[in-house]
Length: 204
Image (cartoon, rainbow, N blue to C red):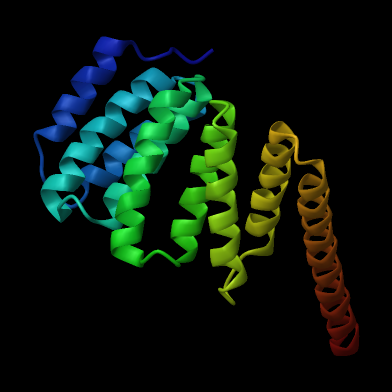
């Protein structure tokens, strides 16, 4: 059985890493935070990510995609331990940076909007959640590089938010579109696999 790191041991390790400002220090802090998250030690993971956030701001400034990514990861950790208000705060901060760095209509902005909407739905802020999901979908629909699975995820959550507001007709429409996207993606994967198998047979 692996021995779980204590809070003091983690703090000592973080402070030791933080004394160094090499290019490798920030990735090491993030790797440590990932390891802590993997063993469901979100409190310690958050503490490490906050130290990484401080370091990233010093290295890159406050409006940088790396800073936004760390803010999103902190939001995820708060979500894992049902601290939804804190999660919302960090996602909202990340969204501002995504909009500034990537633009208001970029897929990364849409992804952040979707995650923010999930948290708003958890907080029973259903109208705000609907607005976040609808904006994310509008961005996705206008972008040829949109990931269908990401769009389907957003549509599923929009359907849930619509149901929470009592708008069952729109909920059904959103859910139907999500199913259609998922089915189409699965069909495309199947066709691709069949094409590869056929190519392999011809080469043999």
